[in-house]
Image (tube, one colour):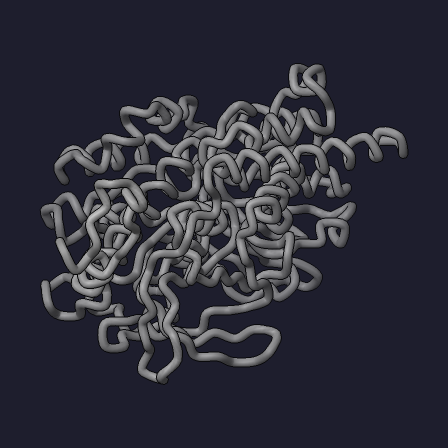
Length: 483
């Protein structure tokens, strides 16, 4: 982009920002706050909502809450600005998998869509010419949405732990100003794929300091220019890491895949229509289990663009039916062990994703034993056949965690999940772009409902005391003491 184009893009975004603010004003955003003050155990005002995570899901959830008049909230993220979520960190694809026309972070406001953001800089012709959304442009778009609608994000602020606090949730956080304790009526856990459990690493994948990585690690592939790199996995991230290594000048990159071939059909694409996204959560347990375990069992093919990005390099190879059984350190490198042989490499990347297991999350120590999971809602045989699905939390209608034993730990219901952990209970409403707007709206409406119901008895006398005599000063006005 030359200087003139850059200047035009800046002007276009400035004008778009003004248009968004006009649209929001027409929609009465932000509406007046309506929640009533609640005092925490420390005597200070408690938050209505603490949102943990300010990536795509967290900022959209916060925006949805602001649109509902819930402004007594805080949004924290442990990463610096621009490093929230995967887009500017460990995501290594060139473009998003999703079609360019999908919406979500905009919450139905046309001027906030990615298309509006793109056209403000490149015009309608630029939109027609765009094939798919470049990854870093998606990040820039998310930051534009956040700034324009006024989502208040506190970066470099980490959640340390949560605990029940007499009908509230206590939270220990640490930010630039140091440690802090706060209390909230509700907590939204929007910490991304990692926040659903943790990184998945084989038990044997230890050691190899500086040479053995998880795909979500920061990796300087240029270090291995001219060397051999091995990648384990058949996912999009596996292919993208392999492509990044090739483009950085690796002499040889080998992808090891446990399956006999790549999955060919992305079944989750079928499930991206409104009926499924809105209706899935209303199904009984058996049908929800059947839909999602089928999709999980079928697997997801890597995007064809990513595969072509690798296959254009003659030094790329795939070894199907060959998972890893061990990793040994060797002078100047590693040795990948499989059932078919040993493979010396300079670096290895494990790209098998993230576990679903909220009991692994250290911040949830105080709640761990009370969390109801899907494994407790299906037969032991089904749970054994689908162990990953069995570890998903079994969530209520507002994406809140539920107790294994009702009454055991009531404050658990004040924790709401808004990451990949919602998938078995609600469908892919927190992580995949097609369901994001539906998911954030459902979450916000449930929180608003609960916040009001909890204070309904306090709202009643406020209604009784309300005075706004609409007929004054007509002849039909009746003074209050005569009514």
